[in-house]
Image (cartoon, rainbow, N blue to C red):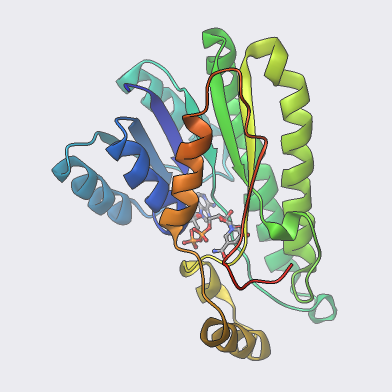
Length: 245
Ligand code: NJP
């Protein structure tokens, strides 16, 4: 296929799974995150299977770092056709615990980080008059859950931004925008939960219901990518079979 993708948050979970699937489909993947040792291992794995990957050290919170990463990818592969805005974090706590540094971190990564990567990649897609941007929101971007007030606020922002972006760049610049809204996916996202009560709740949940795998989300990304050019799969709303809504 020869297309080029930038994947943020590629060092684990959904991002790493998407990197594998896209590379297997012939997409050259720019795999971006802070943990470069993870990215090197991922690249080795992809290369061994015949795919092509470029490791990009990127903290999405830092616009200069993001711009440098995008430049590196364009220098290596000449274009960017797909952006998977996927970096994110989800510490849980009730608002009255006032864990303000965690709130700020979620806003910085989940919202501002996504805006930084979008801003860095858009000029290239506009120049190409084509592109496909995937924003990883969440079911928490459609509904509010207890313990997740700030996370939900950030993901509602991602959903809203995706809808606006689609209106503004879809027809004008021939750029498709897909908002991904997964239910529970078995990744390292839950490892950051420090609150013992919510930690226990999450552990209980993993025993009560099935979780999606990162590869399940990656498959839906491929589905949207492979749709005919005039089709924009606007939302990918994907739940485990037994997750109620
Ligand atoms: O989680 P995890 P997921 N700069 O922890 C990266 C959403 N979601 O795959 O920098 C750059 O395995 C981090 O890389 P590193 C969720 O909100 C999930 O589940 O090396 N990258 C790692 O690669 C998130 O938006 C579920 O630490 C930064 C990645 O983010 C997306 O799915 C449900 C970074 C996180 O990988 C992927 O999360 C749902 C930074 N400053 C939505 N900070 C779910 N798992 O159930 C973090 O609805 N990263």
